[in-house]
Length: 449
Image (cartoon, rainbow, N blue to C red; front, side):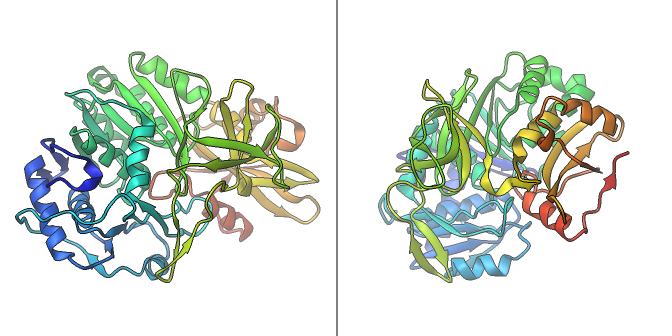
């Protein structure tokens, strides 16, 4: 009996992480062992560092008709998240093997409890059904090859990486998991892996490894990079084309609430996978080529939030998470960034992501977050917090030159450098933490001169 989330089977492909490897048959036996232990439980939390064992528990919960919260070790307030999820069991360790049990539930059964990433605030617990996840697999529309090996180098507490693992197993393809992100370890795994799921910051770090170590680049077997979580800017894509000219990029845009929204593959702009609309602050639809707030209508959408164990159901129909976007005449969309990342300075509104994109094109910049430093007269100073290459750190003059094409209000007035930006568990810069540290004058960073 195959867990419903994996379709009708078979499951012959194995799953491995450093120190742990299971064949498809062993994975199933452990999933059935987990299901027997979880009999009668509606929601579980998996607090287990081994990613293979995490996957066993989640598949077992799916068999038992239970929804799973995968605990993130990076959560600053795990007790708050657990209180909202209110699981009937908190599990850890490796589930024992067992004979098959009958699968419970149907497509409307609550399957997964994702949390918002925490990159822009405290995580919230959402609820997704089996049907929405199965429809997400179809929406991505990626047919893996029979001999593909799929690398998932981030924590399964992130829905982005969990999606990558389950999408691969749904097609009965081998999955390799890394419990903790390491660009060097990922580059080593890419000797055999043919597909990888990443966020742009990870891709940038991986490209840096290949630039420093040409022997690893020469040995790289990748044919497809699936990238989500943030936009892939032109500079990053050009680096990829230069280093791995035969590797295809599939970029998708989505949210924890809506799952997949748009994707691009061999095209310059994202094409919607579901119904989208761009509206003004009053909720009126805007004409093409006009920036506004993106609204989504989709069968992939979450069914609601959990608050202290009680489901606060989402309203059916159109909804928004506050991302700003432009809908083009040809039906494609460009995502401009989250409304919450917009900086009000001297009467002007600055979209942080536009400034960040310009700065990532500067030499020596590995990653950047643009946020506001409180200012009595202007409201906020546009501040660039940069993760720089210690061997080739840019000067402030070089960075200013790289933003000269921006409108004056959008150019950073303050420049800070760090060896590494604070990050969420999924590898994205922890924008909310950085913004709060700037407000409290508590960011451990050096002023660029």
